[in-house]
Length: 510
Image (tube, rainbow, N blue to C red; front, top):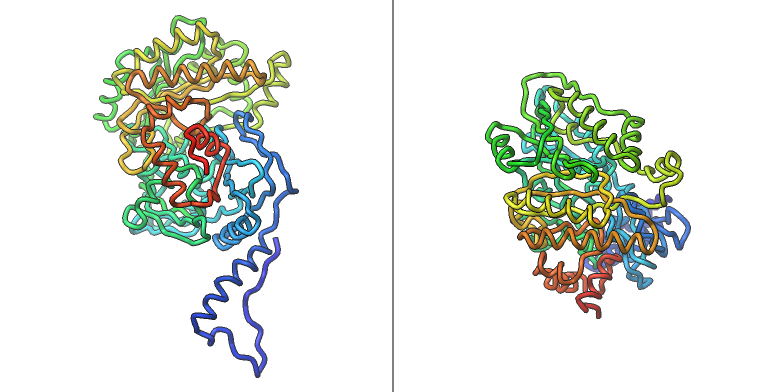
C-alpha cells in the first residue's frame, strides 16, 4: 500500500495552505483528500476474486475487487470509489457467517482484517476502543499490555463467541453474538459506542444517546447500514473461575441453571449427546458451569489440536466412541480454574475439512452448517425430545451441539433474543451435493418450525434457508428493517447475497 503525504511544501513566496481558512478551502480539501486516499487504497488481490465462508464453504461468491483498508479515511475513500464506479460494497472480517452476509456478487469487497489496531483503554471507566478488524486474541493481548501497572484486577472482555477465536470485533457487532453467560444479554450490552462510515462517506458516532436509531440497526444489522470502523467496548474486571462438571440428563435443566445463578456462577452450558444410536441422544449432556474462586493461578489445560482432531474424526465416524471420549475428557477438567476471559477461548481448525478428508477418505465431501434456535426454557425438554425423533427419522447427522441461556435484548431493532431464551446450537453435517444441500435445508427448516411452534425464534447468521413465512413469524418487523435500510442507504451501496435474497423474498427491490 502506498503512503501519500498530505503535508504542504512551501517556498518563501507561497501562501501556506493552513492560512487559507475559508469555506471554499474546506470544501476543496473535503473533496481532494478522499480522492487522494482513493488512489492509496490498493487491491489486496487480483480482480474478480471468488470468496467463501470459512466454516460451511457453501457461499462461493465472485466479487469485482478486494480492498484492505487500514483506516477510517481509507474506508471513506473506498466508498467514494464505489460511488464513482457504480459498485455495491460488501464487508467481511474473518468470514465465519454462513448465510452470505459478507459477500455480494460483483461488489467492491472490503476485507476489514487490516483494521486491527487497539486504540485506547480508559481504566477509570472500564472502556476500551479498537478498530473493528481486531480479533479476540489480539484484543485480549492488547488489553493486558495496556493495564495500569498497579491494577491487580485487570479490565477484560465480558463475552465472546466460544466456538472460535480468530473472529473480528466488527463481525461480533454486526451479528450481535453471545457467549456462555448465564445472566447476560447479547453482545449489544457490551457496546458503548461505534464509529460508522455511512453510504455518503460520512463518519458518525453511534450510541444509546447519539444516533440511537442507527445504533439499534447497525448492531445485528449485518453490515447493511455502513462500515463499522471502531468499537468502544464496556469491559469487566477479570475474575478467576472454577469449572464444575456434571454428566447427566437434560431433565430440570432450567431449575439447575436457576440454582447455579443463585449460587453466583458466571458462565455455563450443556453440551448434549450427538449419538443417534444412544438412548441418551440429545438428552444426556456435559453440564459445565463456572463459579468465582479465590485461587489465584489459573490451571487451565485444554486439549491440544491433535486431540481435538481425534474427537472430530470420531464425531464423523463413530459418535458412540466420540461421545465417550468427550465426556471422559471433560470430567478430568472438573475443578480446573480459568480466567473469566480465557475460559471462553477454544481451539478451532479453519481447515478441518481437509483434515477430515485425509483421515476419512470415504467421507462424502461436505462441511458443517450451524443453526441456532431459541425456545423459552420451560419448552426446552419437549423441543429436544421432538428434535431427536425428527433427526432419527430423517437420518440427520448431528456432529456437535450445546445449550446456552440468554436474557432479552431490549436495544437492537432486529433482536434474536426477543425474550429470555434457551439457545440451542446444532452443528449438522451437510454433503455438498444438490440432494445433500436440499436435505440439510429441510432439516434446518424443520428445526426452525419446532422452535417457532414453541414461541421461539432463530438466529439469522448461519444460513438463509428459512422461509419467508418463518422470517415473518420470528421477525415481524423485518419488512420495516428493509424500509429503514433504503431510508439510510437509498442507493443500496451496502449489499450482500443475504440482503439480496431477503429483499427479493419481500419484493423490496427498486
